[in-house]
Amino acid sequence: MANYPQIDDCSGIWKLKDVKRAVMGGYWRSAAGGTSRGLFIGGDENPAASNVIDFVTIASTGNAADFGNLTVAKKLVANAAGSHTKVVSGGGQTPSLSNVIDDIVVATTADATDFGNLTAARAGIGNSSNATRALFFGRSAPLNATDYVTMASKGNAVNFGNVNEGKTYHVSFASPTRAIKGAGSSSLNIEFVEIATTGNGIDFGDLTAYHDMGGAGSSSTRGVFGGGYGPSPFNANSGGVTTIEHITMASLGNATDYGDLVVEITHYHGACNNSVRLLHGGGADASDNQQDSIEFHTITNGGNTVAFGDLTVTRGSIGGGSACHGGLNNGTGT
Amino acid sequence: MANKIIKYNLTSSGTIPTFIADGGYYPKANGGSSPQDWDLIGATVDESDETGLGELANAAAIKSYLDTYTSEWTDGFDENGDAIAFNQTNAANGIWAKKIS
Image (cartoon, rainbow over all chains, first blue to last red; front, side, top):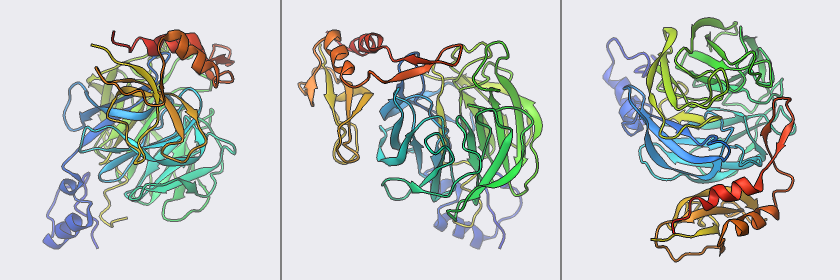
């Protein structure tokens, strides 16, 4: 069966039966509430943790607008997982480590509600999903632990398998079948898990640059790592990393450099995408000064980033998320 | 015009109480069950009479409350990679700045 229509592959002729299947299956663009909103979540308002959620329309450009608030103010927020209707943001630092998972309905601008708890309090974790399961990678003892939740039903997270490398400050994204995490703790390694299983991590290729606390996102086929820092901890002399590189998620190959963050941000930023554009927002510049800017590039073409707009509040160690990312749109209803 | 700085819980359905305008700060584990397993600090909406789990009447009261459970907290790292102790005074003053008199 053809896996179309996809948000990031919407050219050509669609068979009506496939359009119907997509609409009824909940993975057609308009079935997601008509939203292509990107969220920027929580962060560090220096020194206090933030409860702010901002939103933008990813397909346009412009400044962010205020959404509701998180249930718990937190920084070191992971880039969040999302289904077709909600974003699920787990962990963070209050400044104590948090186990709280927030549930954000993207089509509204309402406050987040409590989803449940992670198996342990964590911050600076990797967080990604397909349409059904959200995974939370690492940053608690043991560091290689992975949690997951089924986003359709609120409740506490349960254990997934373990990843090979227990790291902090890594980044993650997903295809509809694979959740991929890389970087963290000065690692250049990438690994993945099959989301439908609860199996252990499997080695992928390698990165060309460090991406600790960087941004990440994906279409349904291509995963992108952008910015960050390394080796850890952040060092103002070496500054942040501007490299944007991509992998083909169906392969096990190494990443390829295909652009740079050039507007302001280098690290500690949030990222969100609509599987076509990847937005990087907030975080800090190469001198570790917090920023309010948002910049973007296209996932297919890469290249250098272009200015998008500004957040409502300047903040670092911020999360991002959307209900239209690349883990959602394969057309198989996973 | 006046609001209050209070301690509170999320509602039993996991929502932020309607009387909270700006909250979710410095959660304290209370041994309860999710979603009411954290005591939070927040500012109420203007003119609200709600006091939640108790009002924190000034910055000193906020600091005294924070001192009861945050002595082991750290907040980031310095240039040498060493953990920075959580500053209760700064945190209390930051929360008190949300007070509308």
